[in-house]
Image (cartoon, rainbow, N blue to C red; front, side, top):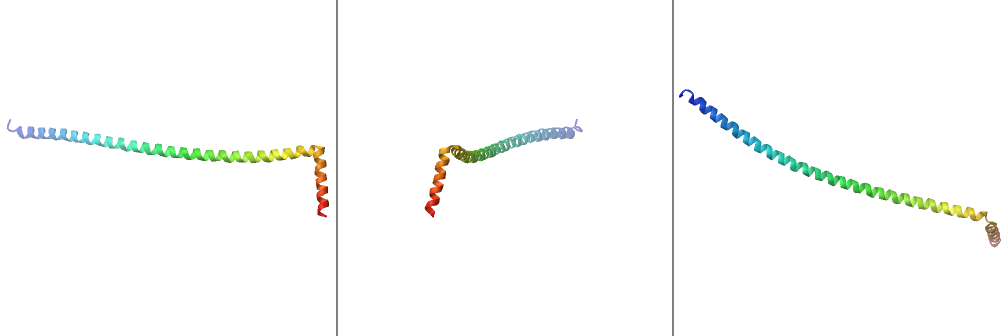
Length: 111
C-alpha cells in the first residue's frame, strides 16, 4: 500500500483540482451570461428608441407632405373655380354687355 500512496494522493489532488476548476468555470460562465443578457437588454432598448425616433420623423414628414398636398389642392381648386366662374359668367349676355360697356367707357376716359 505504501507504494500506491503517492499515486492515490495525486489522483485525489487532481480530482479536487478538477472539481474546483469546474465550479470556477461554471460561476464565470454564469457571470458572463448575466453580463450578455444585460448588454442585450440595453441594445434592445437603444434600438426601440431609435425606431421610435425614426417613426416620429416619418410621421412628421408624412404630415408635412399632406399639408403641402392640401395647399396645392386648395390652390388648384381655387384657380379652377375662379376660371369656371369667369367662363360661366362670360356665357351670360348681360355680363358680356356690361363688360363691353366698361371697356368702351374706360377707353373714352383715357382719351
